Image (cartoon, rainbow, N blue to C red; front, side, top):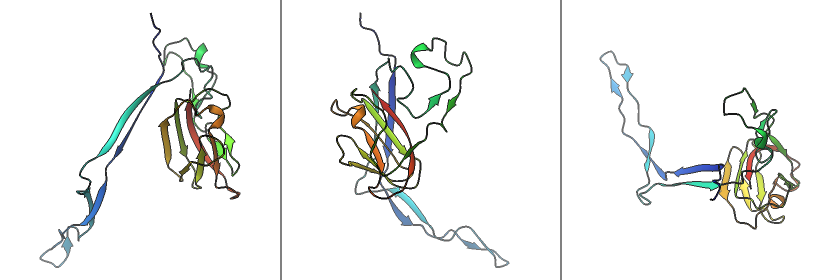
Length: 183
């Protein structure tokens, strides 16, 4: 009998293409001369040329024997995944997200070492400086603006050692990221 995989990453995305339009004024003049209501303003509605919303949800089964929590930038204090035999919330344990911020400079750097194939990748740029993501080799494939994030399922050709992040080449700037790189 097959052993069920008890680790999954579930994620979703929702995109609504919108156009702006001006509304008519709801402003009224009172007897004493003052006004109430709102003058015309800009509002948004679904773009009728596209006329639909985009989105999806996905689920990826990840390897259950990732011995430590280094596959994510969040760090549990004093916990090792495979040694954690207690029920969830049975003991007080802390997740330190402040520790999970990784500083990135203009030199392409591997986030997670190893040769395992990556099944799921999530990187969020917490800073204001743009960073760049390389998935295979040193070619910078994806630009991640400040405050933005990228997530994806990947193929077996993307390994832990080939996922690299940097700010713009020769920019001498830094930013911080958080990540999930699951095998």
